[in-house]
Image (tube, rainbow, N blue to C red; front, side, top):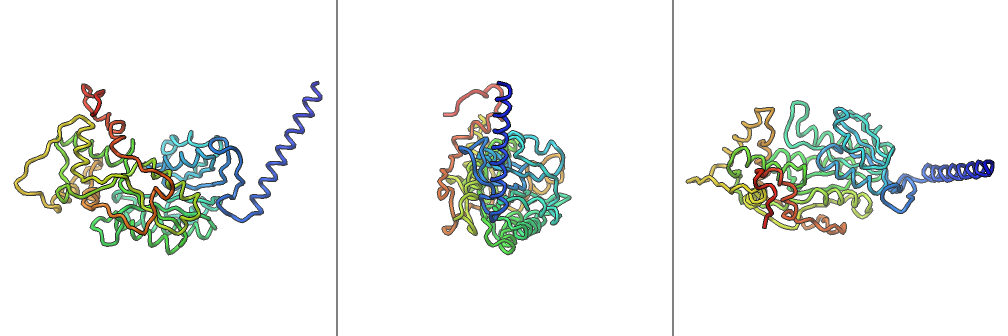
Length: 369
């Protein structure tokens, strides 16, 4: 009996080796495509989706959701990172064991970028920053870095490049963030014409820098935030989970090649209305300072600029004010979340789960009618 079990085990091992060798031969002999690795399994965890994705900016707010969506369908994910192990350790459970690879990199090192994308058939660029730092300007990150990455993808023969920009990106915007995002789109198109460009609106979620930012400012200033344009600029916030699902869906949909997609939420709000909803959800009174005349936008920009001088207080900067000044504009010739069979989530349905932590302990468990 022991001999029979040993023979059976040896035959089973041989069959597994033959199957693995067959898959490897098919992958190597075939042309690089979205199915560079043959798909296997029922789909989801412990399956093989056929996607090998390098996700730049994976350690950021949107990045963790994108990595999770790739990992849950059985993809191999390469995660370039800056910093140390603490920057990416929260991503480890998001893919099957051995299917996520962490590599350090520098955005301005073109040779390193080529190394990180040469084995991938999908590359996603989520790299961005909301203000300049002592290490990188907005031009460095949104334009020059995007150009280098797109060039590396083209030279490596990458099949799909997904570049994440921003809604309202425009060369004539008063916001340097939005201007550099627009220039970055042109740079990517010049190097990789078939890239898919995604422009999300202001994203909300548990770790966002939108609703959490407004709640923090209300908590620290003890009054409702005063916005440029009298708070009448309109926004269509989009749930970060919907954006991540849209990115993965676009990567798997060949019809999105070379197109621009704009992701936004189902409802339009003024900035004043969003602030009022934040106050209601956090159970704080909607205190508005009565002013005889509106504060000029330039004064608000300078106030925000002054707050940037404190390196330990990063809740507000001039670029935030300038972006709040811009109303969301959606173009009729771009794709939507609905085109990818994704229904946008209503922001009001998630306000309490996101913002409950900003309540006073006496009102923490109260429901919002």
